[in-house]
Length: 376
Image (cartoon, rainbow, N blue to C red):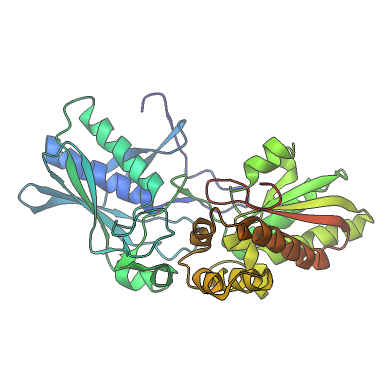
């Protein structure tokens, strides 16, 4: 922790909006505060949470710390999503922590946190819906509290007040996560991207990327594909635009900027996960879950058109997630054909919105950043 610097939430995101912290950060802070009571009898008003970025920690306020039962420490954190209107903003996340004498850290779903019941997620069936990065953050927090001392093992239960109701506003019921919300986050920090003002900032980023008439730029809905843009395509950060869920507006901004200068772009790359990009095949140009359906139906439809047998099409259509489709198709000769077809069709549709790009090239990647289609 000593080598880390404090992460300053008072510094606004590039779009002028306030950042917040994830449910994973909340859960980690609650665990750390509960451990302080359990092991040291302390009731901290705030704790430092080591973020996945090794350079930073975040100081998180603790709402409450007390005993929920003899030998079980309880701590609560209020989720602050910043200016991003996510469903869990203002929710109370809590942890109950006890010693288990098993010399291992065990995770449990408390009230309001879901449990996985279908394959294709980043957690196994039967496990609490606490994603891998939050689990890693919690493990680090335990190590920091122990400070090298003996580890008897702890049972950690993560919950969310009213999580069952909040989860109805998410894809969790469709994903087979029952009982509440998921504990999420890959950076520990919430970037305020799902706002109309973020759309306006994307226009600025697009114009900067196109500013000196480059041969190519890349749109990435998220972090997946960004490494490909840098390491394989050789694009600088200024040429890579993170467009979040706003595929349609981003394409329109590029067309408008090119029209204004009379320029043409040689190649527009669109790089990301098929769970986002394939949604355009169903006409969804805002790919946020509140404004679109999941992409399995489009993937299944195209698999049928590529000659997949009816049993395989049904399997794809009934998959839990598009990532689950990736797993289902592993080793199947259909896989490369299907993803390349989706890349080509999505690129053709996108090209209709930005005809001043001479080419639109789509590349799809799984959650680990492995290329699926033409880049495989």
